[in-house]
Amino acid sequence: MRPGGIVSGQVYIAAADVAMWLAIKTRLGLADGSVTAEMKTNFLGGAKRESFLCSAKVLKFGRQLIFGTAECVGADGRLLTHHTVTYIRV
Image (cartoon, rainbow, N blue to C red; front, side, top):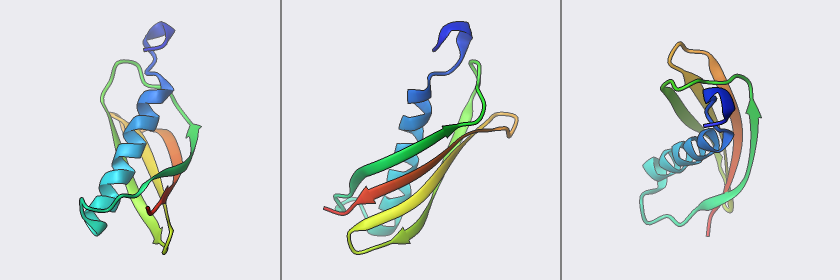
């Protein structure tokens, strides 16, 4: 938590990374060794001690790179963060 009870940005980043990882694993399986290569995060709103949901969508599976987006929304449906994520297939 940040001062004032605001959820820290690292929490959203971790949630987006895990959501993207799960989206990739549903397609490529648990044996796939893809890892995060790059992530850009835009903070659009803050949450104070409330639940939030983070979902991810794979936009393109390339031979070496996987591109996708993730979004975290508050309990009331407000968009809190938007992430663009690139994974590298190793």
